[in-house]
Length: 124
Image (cartoon, rainbow, N blue to C red; front, side, top):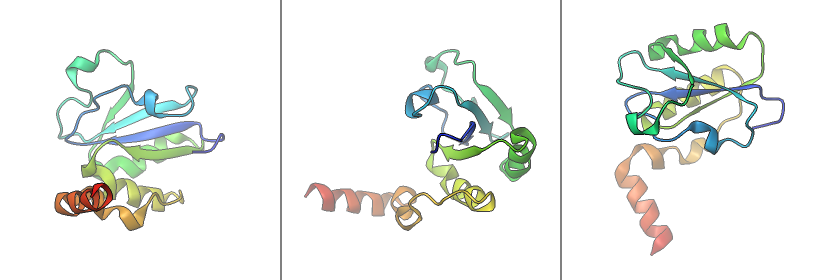
C-alpha cells in the first residue's frame, strides 16, 4: 500500500470482522469502507464493540459500481478479511488496475487440504 492511497475498501461476506481493521493497516489516516455482502449477517462480530466504521451493505455483484461511486477518483486499495472474498478481491483489483497480491499462492487459502499440506511441509 503506497502513501498516495486515500481509502481502503474491505470486502466482507460470511465471516464477520473479528477486530478493528485499522490494526492491520500501516496508516491511521486512511478512510476505511466496508462493503458487506447484503445477504450476510452482521459485518462485525458483536464482541468487537462499536468501531464507528463506514459500512455499505451491497450485494457482491454491486461492489465494483459502489467502489466507483464512493471513491470519486481518489486513490484506493481493495482487501478482504475472509477466504470467501479472495477471488472477488483479486478480480476487482484487476478490474481497477491494482497490483495482484500473491495470485500464484491463492489456492493455499481457498483449499483447506492444500493449505494443511503446505503448512505441514513448512513445519516438518
